[in-house]
Amino acid sequence: MSRIAHGAIPSPNIWNTPQVYELENRAVDPDGAADAAMREIRPRDGAVVLDIGCGTGYHLPALAAEAARVIGVEPHGDLVKLALRRCAGLPGVEVHRATAQSLPVPDASVDVVIARWAYFFGPGCEPGLRELDRVVRRGGAAFVVDLDATRGDFGRWFQRTVPSYSPTAVETFWTRQGWLRRPLDLRMSFERRADLEAVLRIEFTPEVAAEAIRETPGLELAYPNVLRWRTY
Image (cartoon, rainbow, N blue to C red; front, side):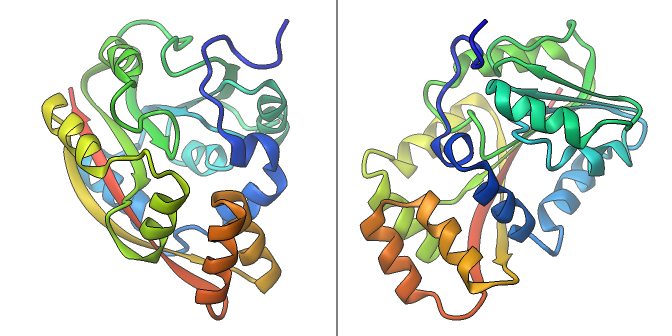
């Protein structure tokens, strides 16, 4: 059996350097702004929560502290093993090797879906959106947290790294799908300068990463994001 689920879209930063991506997870949003915004729209207390693209399961324990049941889905088998290890002993948490476009859950069985920087990047994610229509039950909500490439230094560095990315096309796509949006002014905060530089190197091309490192003093940087959501 392949260690990567069929149909998975590669995620080079976490797939190739999970240890560095762990540093990024620890650094992102120390204020909890993204989670607060999602809770305001649809609380998780007693809910069945599905984390799509859960990676090493970084967010699963925190979700389990609120939800009745938490399901992590990740296409990379090695990361699934790390997520299972992280959540060992936590009741009500399960992790599956699967993709966003083929979710291993029954129809109308999930209350809250969260995808952070995973799969739902705009045009091309229609199969995953159809799966959301299938699995989210009435009264539920789906959330997508993604980088806002139109704002700040981080957005500028991203667009230089991925010049084919069209923010206009992405916004048009989500508007046509009927999703709502809210800007999130997140930040990354690191304990060590070496960690900040390592994260910039896995996010951008070598040339852009070197520029980002030069332009970023200290241990913090702004990380403009956007929260997208739909209720069911």
